[in-house]
Image (cartoon, rainbow, N blue to C red; front, side, top):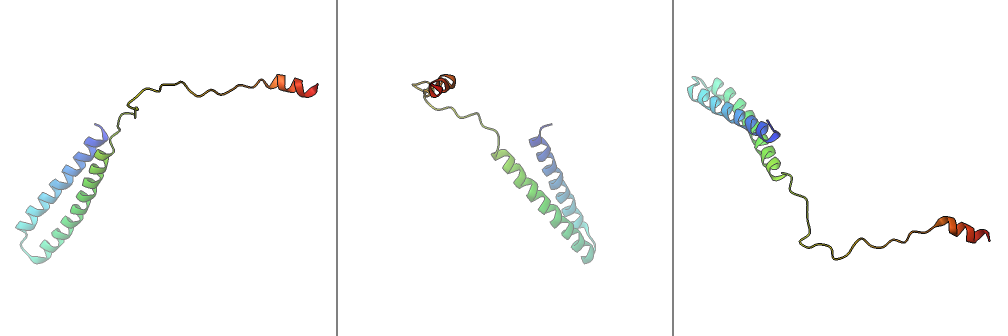
Length: 94
């Protein structure tokens, strides 16, 4: 399983937890229990928002093919002269 699939699976799990907490809030019998469940649901929502952002960033940063110019170079690499340093030393000694 690649990284993208793992992140998507984590996001799906977070969303499922939010759904289950929403069902539990709907069935809660008193204010204190609803309040506690809503606070937990808020934390889970924050985590889901984080993973959603992370997933969108990961999708945007997919590797792209290497850049290739639309034309071929009409010339070879620039000429760099090679100096023969041993001949230069001989000339200096004379």
